[in-house]
Image 1 (tube, rainbow, N blue to C red):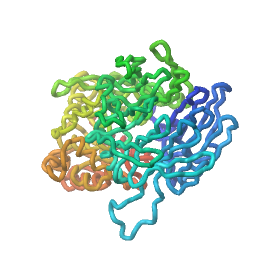
Image 2: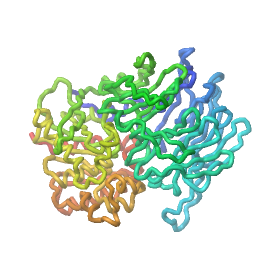
Image 3: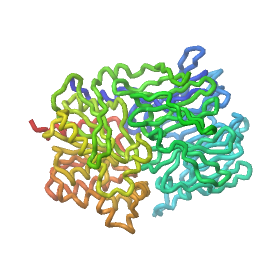
Image 4: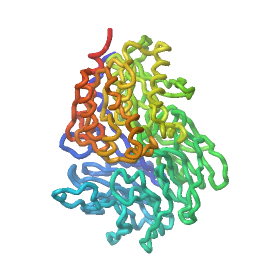
Length: 627
């Protein structure tokens, strides 16, 4: 197989935020570079609109540096989105008139607009906007920030902006059908960790008063939506590791009655990621169930069980929270979809007679998919305690020999591998490796019961699941037991550190922005509650348990050559975690190198850094191959 250049894996077009107008006349989406350039704040992107009646696609962002968070007006005549005039500018709200194709800038704010929703009349918008940050104090007081993200009402005709919430942080919101109320996910403080302890708040739009109606701890909440009668709110909830990783069970809740939320799906659909109302009052849900994308219809009002419209061997993007856009009048949905043989494209589905018929809308990435060949198989194995596990094995087509195996562990852990293209994996395939992507306990895709198996688990059972998967592959002759490698990022990087301190089966390891010391990470990261809720351990009241979960406490066992890569400005897993592990390995005489990428946070986003990291990882593994 011809070797793939690292730059080839970045030659595709990234598609996101696909939206159908309610009347089904228009489709809009964002096309972007899968990287940002050095010196720029974000990737370059373009907003596109497709007019179905004219069968015409045109640029909606008209010279802007980028745009996203697309939302059609209730009558389908306008498209609003958050855009940037230039790389350094604050995002502003823009409005495209779909009849005239005229684009107007609606706001000129010093704050940063994060989200907006149309009211039912279409004459006003509700904005979620962070306040303008002032000059930093000298000295700066840590965690003394009062720059909240607050809600504002914007009247489109007059341009008047009226503040709705004050004195607390709003993370997400939904406007009731009659626009009299807003349900919001809110916290007392504006820090990233505050999201994990956020509560549901009901806001009266007239009185501008608010009251807390639900505290979900230790679980988190996302994807708020009202029922059409405005009596109940639906949301997705589970214990999750990061803001934006929304997946769990679907709940119904009345913010007016004070009753407990009702679990609608109760682990039956796998992990529910998204939902919306159809024109006949039913719920269309998108879940991942045993690795397959599943679309189902529910009738909560009648108590009718879910009807599966389709269960598919493909992935619906984005990775953090798969979602769709629904045109209720035409029962059509739009998704960004990929599978192991096809890169991201937009597909339109028509719902009819209990099934969905699909039609591909864009053809932007066909050539890139042809260039990056590879095969993928779903594999299943039994773990140490008898629990059935799943994962994916990527390999070169037509090559049935035992190959060197890279085990790539996902982050979160509230994430999962699915039927995806995974373009970076093709880089390793072209260098003679097979790649194993396991979904150990704690992963999403099998319902909250499976993802919460990590809760309170101190003994590393998720890594034992992975070891059992490796044993299965080598036992089946699908991998060379003398050439095993491991890599992972974030929580996957933590499991790499755990792997090299609890086993010696790997020739070499790559720890990408991973955790080595849970205690010091807890004290310095921006997301302090993920580990406490996930592991069910208080670090300061039960420090001995934190030590039992920290790879650094077992580092004297390490023998595996380990490459450490980290972002210099990582707020989620501070760079000190990589330095600690590197220092310990070096002083103990274990082969190691540490590279710190400037201007990077949690993962690589600059084009040259992505390429450099890929090359270094492949070279590290290649240098430790046994003939």
